Image 1 (cartoon, one colour):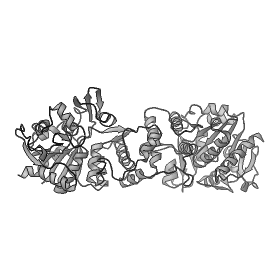
Image 2 (tube, rainbow over the protein chains, first blue to last red; image 1 turned 90 degrees about the vertical axis):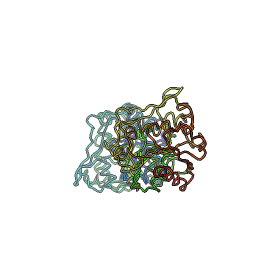
Image 3 (cartoon, one colour; image 1 turned 180 degrees about the vertical axis):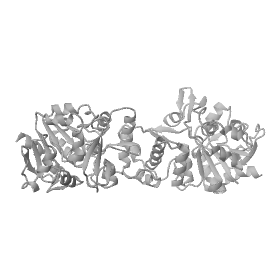
Image 4 (tube, each protein chain N blue to C red; image 1 turned 45 degrees about the horizontal axis):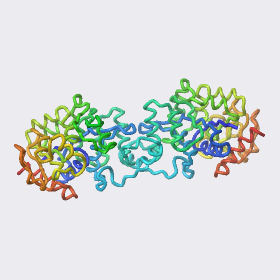
Length: 307
Length: 307
C-alpha cells in the first residue's frame, strides 16, 4: 500500500513520522506546505519542510517541539549583539541547512530538487516534496491589518484574530514535479493533523492539487488537529471558531468539503459527531505523546480505509 | 597626533591593536584590505576587515591566530553533513557578522557603512574603513594557473609559488568615503607588518590611494613583516624571495618604493641594512608576543617620526 500525505509542520511532521514507521519509507510520499516559507537574513527558510525533514531524519527536538535536537544558538546570540535580524530563531545547525538551500536556490536549483538532496544527505528515504517550486506566501487578514504569515505567527505571536487567509502567488504556482504523480499513484490519501487554514489550505491552493484530491479514485482521510475543540498547539482552534463557526468535528470536516471520505477524531470528541454528512468518523486517540501513540494514530487513519 | 594605518588581516590587526593602545582610538584610522574578500555560501566575507574588527573589539582568538575567541562550530559541522560549502571555516559567531553584512550589502548599503555600523555595535571607536566600497578581488598567478585569492590561500593552502598578483576591479574601484580624508589629515602614515603583495598592494591598487601616499607631506613608516628573512606566518617570505629577489630589509623597502620614509626592521636584521637608500631603518623587536610587545612596536614605529 502506498500512501500520500499532505502536511504542515510540527504536528503534521510528528504524524508523518508515525506513518512512515507503519507503512515504510519507500511507500510513503509527503507533500509539504511552503506557504509559511520566509526570508530571514536573506536566507530562504522553509519551516514546514524542515520540520518534516528533521522528523523523518530523527533529528527533531521533541521537547521544544520545533527545530533540531542538540541545537546551539551562537549565531543568534551574536546577531542580537550586532543588531541583526533576530526575531526568527535560527539555530546554528539549522542555519547550515538554510545556507545550503539558499545558495542552491540562487543558483537556479528548484526547491523540490534541493529538498530531495537535503533529505538524501540526512539519510531520509521517504519522498518529501514541496507543494510547489514557485513562490507561494500565506497572508492573514486581521483586525490589525494584513500580515505576512511569519510576521503574524512568530513576530506577533499569532495573537491577532484571523478574518481571512490568502495565498500570494497561488494563481501562478504550479505543482512541484512529482506531486500530481504521487497523488495519482497512491492507494490512500491522508491529510495530517495540521491547521486546515494555514498548513493544508496553502497546499490545496496550488493549481491542480485540490483538483487531484477532489477527483480521487482512492479514499482520502483527514486527521483532526483538535481535541475537545482545542488545538494541541497553535491557533487552529481560534481560527476554526472564527472562520468556520465552531470547533466540532463537523467544522473541521467542512474545511475539507468534497475532499475527504473519513475524519479521524479524538475519543474526547466521540459524542459530537453530528453533521458530518458523507464523511465517516473514525474515533481514536489522537494525542501523539510518544512513538507508540504516533504509530497507533497512523494505523487508525489507515484502518479507516481497509475497514 | 593622528595616525592613519594601512593594514591586512591577522598580523596587521595585532599591530593596529597596539597602535590604538598607544595613540588612542579617536586618533587612529585604519584602512583595511578587501582584496581577499570572498563569497562563501552566498555570504560576503571580509577576512581582513573582520580580523581588524575582532582585534579592535578585543574579541580575537589570539591562540588560534584568526577568528573570534570562544567560537563554536555547529554550522560548519552540519554543512559538512549536508554536503555544503565547508572549505572556508566560518564559526557560528562569525557567521552572524557575515549574515548581517551580506543582507545590508544586498539592500544597497555600502561596505564602508556596514563596517562602521558593525564596529559601533561591537563598541569599537577606532575608525575602520575598507580601501574601497567597490568590488576588488586579488588573483594570484602560479605555475598551476591563476587562482582567486582564497582558493589559493585557503583551499590550496598557499602552497603554489606566486609568479604575480593582480587586482580584479582595481581600475574601476574608488577609494571608500573617508579614506582620502584620513590620509590627508593624518600626522603620520603607517604600513602595518602585513604581506606587501597581498595585503598592502591591493589597498594601494585603489585609484588615488597610492597617489595619496606618494604625494604625502607627512612621514610614512612601514613595519617589515619579516624576521631574519622569515614570515612569522603566511607566505610573505616565499613571495618576496620569488617576486623581489630576496627577503632582506631592502627587498621589503623596494615593495614600497617612493611611498615610505622609514622601515621598522627586527633586531635580527640589524646587520642587513644595506641598499635602503633614502629609507631610514628603525631597529626594534617586531615579534608581537603579547600586549607589551605590540605597544613597544607601535612606539618604535611612531618614534621613527619624532626622532
